[in-house]
Image 1 (cartoon, rainbow, N blue to C red):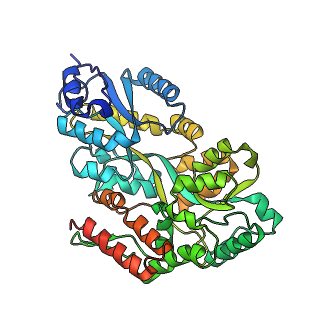
Image 2 (cartoon, rainbow, N blue to C red):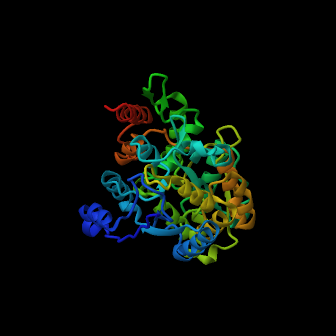
Image 3 (cartoon, rainbow, N blue to C red):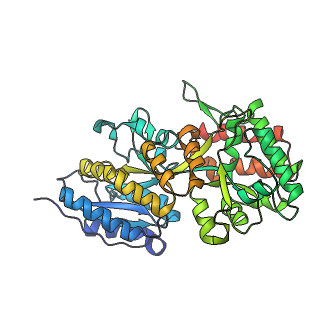
Length: 428
């Protein structure tokens, strides 16, 4: 007889230690490798979609009608996610499917907690490359992209028109445009250069021709942050603030939210923002409707500069006994109908490449350059569980802030950052 799961949720903030006991007592989660059940437990990160309850009611009803398998979705706060999942793994009470931030996936895969999906004949080429590479570890597939975000430049199209400016197509033109806006709009920030926004720094490392870190054949990681090309990119970006005055001194402490708010409040004329941000900007300030545009991050001498592809993957947990049904559910959420609906409700791009153009064409035209960025020039961080420690220690943020604060030269700051990345990734 098929086992059926029940579930009682105890918030981690109230009783993290009790999670395993409650889950075990209720028979929730997998890990026993027993007979397949007629229900799935799915953990989804909370807050990405304002209509998440209605979305999953529709998605789960359709899945149950098609397969006969019921689905229970639990919403997990992002700040609790890593601890909650780690606790569930330790207690053998994992869900069948979970949404994982793309930088989380390598760590949980390395721990043996995720089911290898490659046996299902997954066509990895259909997904956004910069995200898909985060789900591919050691020849296996441990997650597939669900939704994606990419960073490009959002700008005030009305000001460009007023001052006769064209969309810049290389670094020199970007600098000239920013300087022109600074001179024409003295009360505005032409292009904020944030200190606490590592994903706004990464494109300049890649755009200069460097890599954050490269794994050698012996498994040793070598950072190229201190390479000549990387330094040229970092220097160009920080010089916009230090030499050309296109930013503001306060931006040294700005994160991506602060940058978005400056643009929404009409304090900034251009800004490096995520693809979900234009929707949020217009919700915050409807007066900007029809007055903003976007362009793909320009390459040093033309073309496109790579940008970090963020977002979430959907992963199936190992040992639940329901791995095949869980993979069916992952395919259900990433299929045309529900991936498009999720994108429409959140502003994020679908994780499947073929759906990106369709979504951007039907959505705000401001998203079209972001779609180009995502498909043509998206990158991921080094695929290793240790990367989360690089982020936790804010290595790139520290590098950026030390330069902007005048505490270190570009050469000094990039050399220190490269040393720190190598120390962490090589287990030092």
